[in-house]
Length: 559
Image (cartoon, rainbow, N blue to C red; front, top):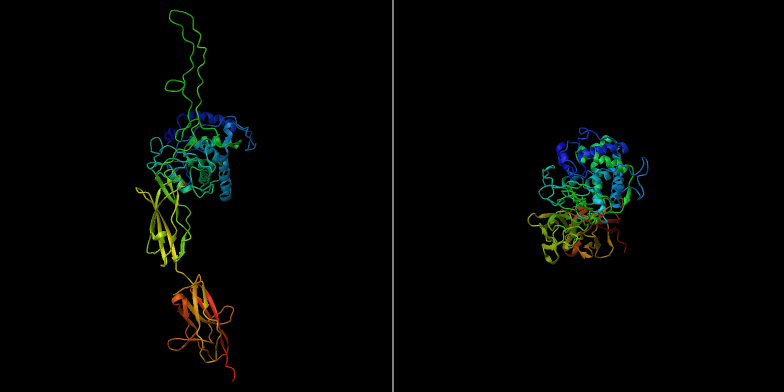
């Protein structure tokens, strides 16, 4: 494994031998905590011995630049130096804000971990040069994806594709992605939404920093302890050289940092797996600037040495930064996701308040425009899109989203689904459950207002007629329960007073009935017993709407 880790170090960067010497010198001036031996740190976030794909980065290559031997400040000083600090101690504003926000977030959810933001800064420096010197937009997303080399087993770990290329654009092998260099399988478990935009994007520094913090804090780690911190770093990339490099930057940033504008951070000298920074032109053959001419040797046979050419060579043009304009994203569908559709619910005959909305992304996770999406109503239902259609084909807009037409429920209650399908070779499908509820009465009223009276032992001369409605319209087939009730605080069925008769002519004081056309219902005859008084009849619909009717039993006045 040691030889394999050595091959992962970025070519053109500091060699292991030089790194070891520099670390030794740095230790004398900065005194970082000594890293634990491999055996002590041979533990991943899950607590198991890591293979290539159990480390957060898949043991991808990393930048081996070391911090300068002159520390940015004296021990015990503030870690918020003014902008006059050394260039290497400057961290781009958005990147620094993301690290500190992640520290604060973990302090609230996992205070026992004691995550220091300087550790995130050290890892971010080693993994991506602080997101290529802070080249991020206003939301903290890199202008173009930061991708490590394909983990194809040739000098690196062998990790076959786990995300269909959705994050890394590679459908054959995985690659480390973003400022904190997560491989897709690790991001699927640990990815976070650090900036609150509803997405978990490994190319966003706020998302990636929070995810890295949670990954480092896995289990019961206390990062204020050297042993736990070493185990956490080794779980990120299982290499002793990696641990030493991160430890060096961690000690450096603990001595002091300052904020610099986004895009102006110091780029690493050696790059190999992520998008490279241009290197200075070589001084000899094979391309680059021509060396300055020197004195010519004396000619054979004597003679004086000619004077060197007094005209100095033109200065070599310094390398320019790669353009920050993002390349045109690939127009290949990578994924289809819900863009915020709430549960689909409607009452029979009415339009669903929610409309299905989806978002298509390309293989790099960016929004994909002009992607065809087909919405289909599936199941035993008479619900339809506008125009009576069950299938509608639309295309996504510039933000990758598309919204289905308004869906209207039919008269049939029940559950069905709406599908959204994008892609042909490898279709992506989303299913949305939709529920139609039968109309339920929102009111029950008497059709007349005549007082209902009867003499003891007689039948009430007038029948009770009611009407159930929904939004002002009569609602047929509404279940109604009619009950003679007591006057108690919690009414119950009365055992005396007015009553109905069952099929055998026996008294009953509760009946289950159903409204007819237009919601009308005429109750059966009501009879009075021998007890005079005022009684109550309560009518209750299945939806809980009630109506109370007064019944009076009194003797007829004398002639």
